[in-house]
Image 1 (tube, rainbow, N blue to C red):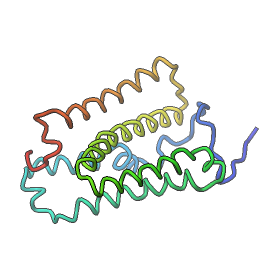
Image 2 (image 1 turned 60 degrees about the vertical axis):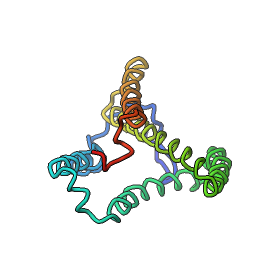
Image 3 (image 1 turned 90 degrees about the vertical axis):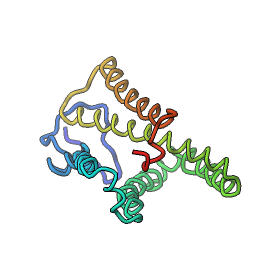
Length: 186
């Protein structure tokens, strides 16, 4: 029995039905962008040039790269939350109430630099958690695409690996000797 999905329906994630392709978009896009090989390559080049590498780049380059990478992610999130009425109802706490609270907190932070610093620290601490959670979800999705549906214990172990990777990042960011907040100190 074949089920036809409308453009806004999403298939059930619990099914472990293998797909014919191992890749989401093909081997090169998946490896370079999805698995981080491009990031690894840039990191190796930067490490090879030492601290002079970042000094040689224009100051506007980092914010432009961040915008280039972040905007599609934010756009996809907004489409997912706001595109359909049932989604807007499902995510109302996040899409309306939490958004309004964040706007108010931002406005308060404009006038209180200490509060703004705390909010920036919370955001920068939460951000790696968000990314490790996404990586876990992508990992589980790829397992299911290949027909593997790990039992609960294996899923918890897999999740724990991502949890520990986040904890290492958080500890590194908040340790007294960290250069994570001072890239010039590297």
